[in-house]
Image 1: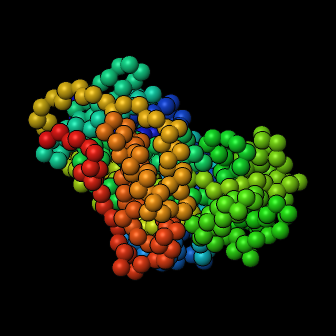
Image 2: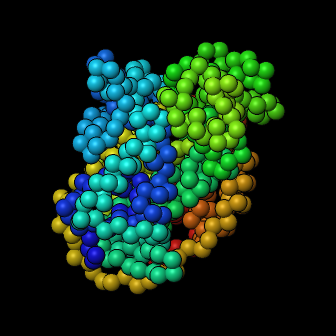
Image 3: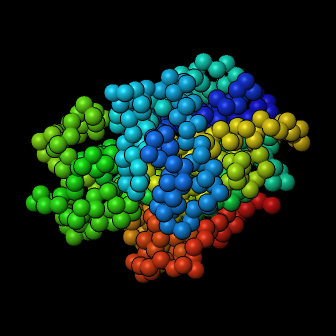
Length: 487
Ligand code: SIN
């Protein structure tokens, strides 16, 4: 396996990168079983792509930039959105079974802040369908060596250039010397007590990149989904926005609508409105009684498993951490500030999402960035590696219950200088040994520095958007004052 590209993460981005690298030999490290704990498989809504006759790339670009609240990188948006038709075509080629109209054309769903119906979906289990076909394709590709239950522990870097990766399977620790590492480890929702992400999504890949010296970007921007099923489960099942696309409405405990017809407003606006109800001691429900299990089988199954029949009663919902707009800063080749260290999917910050992601742009980005990382790696002959890295001490265990409590209290939908400063004081002493604490510290620092409200970042002490701050913030490990960094 020496000097083969190593991909860390078995979600849609990692699988697409591995497939696009074939027939080049590649190692794919999966934290669980292949596809097992990847958030991509849980995506309900679908993939936003310009395939409808009334749509255009310009319209999809405009919607993405408008949702991004002034922080999208227009060139990146144009490149990603142009990749939409390729993503759909590629998945269809792999055998994806997307919903169709009676005339055979793709059935397109509507989600918040999209000017057109453009969500290609497989009922409400699109992520599962995408993962099904990508996993089958990976299994049928002999050049990909899949290592399951593998936890990446360290990326070796010399002269700002990747030299290898250390990982552990159970108690066995191994090193693969390599000149290309791709981080595709997903998001950070697991840092919060209420999340739709797998609990393992604590940003370990971002911390790995930060410890390797890579810059992170936009990490203060967290998207909270307004409708997670409020039934006491952790993680919380998602109640897809697609239900509101088909007319479901928010109601309060007395059954009264409270969004004045704006149930499908941008996600941050709706999440704040729902959170305000909870803050006032009320509960919130989604009235979807006109919808059917035929159209939304995954949502109906999750509700029924928790004693709720959406055909007869409104669904109890509350906001939950859902998607991280920020991540490892990458260029158009998906390469970070460390030569040979790539990032794709939710772990990457490309400039597509800005301060707020447009619904269903994430699977699109996962697959385009996976493709682009593969193309960049394939275009370079593997570098000669200078010396063989030696095993290093891995970071310690994360005290997740405590970190989740701190993040939920201080880095949630509403933030303030006092809360963020408290989070930094509590978390930064743990950052040396805990990946989750390191990342949460960097997020809180970035949120403290952003003295305004914009997109997914809302400050009670700075409730307005400040046009002078319409730029991305970048940060790195040197920003954590408590870190001791080896020379
Ligand atoms: C949803 O189905 O509501 C989620 C879609 C997304 O997060 O893009």
